[in-house]
Length: 400
Image (cartoon, rainbow, N blue to C red):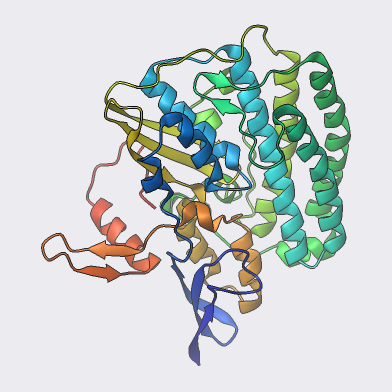
């Protein structure tokens, strides 16, 4: 017998409001729908009334966990419009914070995944180690959450020799602990048994649905903006793109732990090759009229900021495509054929940030002005229909 089960927008398993509608046949999920709009804050509209400098701190508050991802992506786009290059020392420090944030985000996710799987001792161990990363971020920037390290043309703070030594000393302990977690994540029988085979997403489905980040890489799709379209100093930094071929929640766990170990290598490379010189340069307040698109590999996947300048000190348009929104279509596919009890684990596996991804789910008829509230499935179907016959370039980005 088929029936529908609503989950959210307020639910104990959800830290942010989102509405899921599940169609079940007994305990098995036949279809899923994601309804947006419960947490839309209008950040993009607010940005039009603030200067570019003020918007660095506004975009940083799009997300609490990967705040540096959004401010860096925004700054990259504005620096394109300003036609300036930040000094190399500033670039190294900017992306040092990026990699520390990646480690912090992945360790936070691993703890949450362990909790969802009933492995609370691992949750406590991982979050204990995460405190070391938070302490390093506080030492570098003065803040534990919104680091406010970015500015146009570089970063706001420099590093001294003592701070560099502290970072390198902390890496030794963190690396040892993370290798232990990788062994647990890949071999502990009860943990593996709970994650293996849950939330299946084949390689073909990941490509077709334009999955991003660890969600795609766990389905053996080796995409990573840092490697595919290098920015900052990533073009000269050796690192590997971590993948898995299990195509399930277990693979997404292993990929994230592997990425933590790769981030340690990148951080060590940055600290041992930190160039001398200034950390920032003076920049104009008003870019020339034009458009810029910035891409950034956030912990959850590809982050995109579109910025349009009209020649004033405020942007005419800011458009943000967060990685969570890019993974929603794949999430619907992962939920299908799963069990009702697997929903929190599957949904958590994309590391969702609802406030990053939220959009007003309303269509407006241009001829009549009539507004119609729609769900994510309708938006996805409309996007597919629009793009079905369009010639796609190699670097084309699907709107969802």
